[in-house]
Image (cartoon, rainbow, N blue to C red):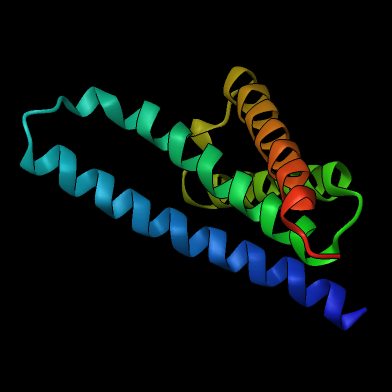
Length: 123
């Protein structure tokens, strides 16, 4: 049971670290280029999709089975962590439209990452 939990926590930690690095990179690119700051919501969604996709891929690759299920689970776990962080830091940003949109993004990206992870697994 500890090994199972550690795989998911490692993947989630790597996804959080990657999202932090990508956010800093996106902020630096927008700051030092002539790009408009209205790109931040789109860049945030792209970063969310990439990190949840890679998280689902890593977990299902480690297990070697049930990729869609494991990827969707990691998408839901990422979404729950995101909602909790949003509630703690600024609860006024939570509304139904963005809630369901982000939930769909996380589930879809995690599921697709889980499917790809099965193809990449060696088991």
